[in-house]
Image: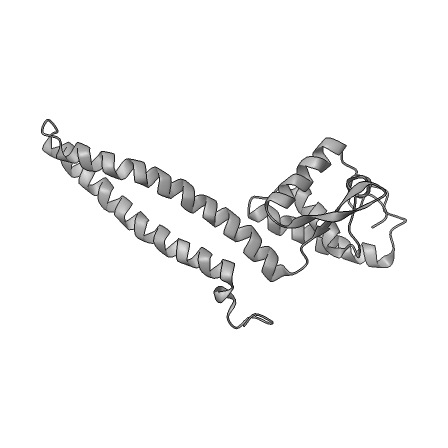
Length: 186
């Protein structure tokens, strides 16, 4: 990609680059649906179709973004394992490459997000449930409050079942058993 793909001056883009613009936009829109920044989705889309690793300076030129925003975007994509920082360098500059296997990108993105949800919720439930149980068993609690605690505990027990199931799902994604029947995924 030669220049700011989504900027105003796109007359110098090749026919291929012009054809890829809607695809890059679709990738960005899709990532936006799942909570990723739209601009970072554009960057991922550009890197996805790039035939070689890119430096931050190259990304900055293509995206027409500030260096700080570009650095933040790349860090965000690395954190979601959509982009990898390579060990080699070009002219002493760091190189980055996009994950181009959609199955792997899906696995990387969703296992990170879902595992984070599981961890947050399990920690909160691990704190709330014993405290609700203790409150429910307290001698100075009203019958109405005891019933409310019981209802809350029942809801949380159901949530525990869900998060046990979700953990199995995430584990299956990580080891690949959820990809049964998909091309190249046995």
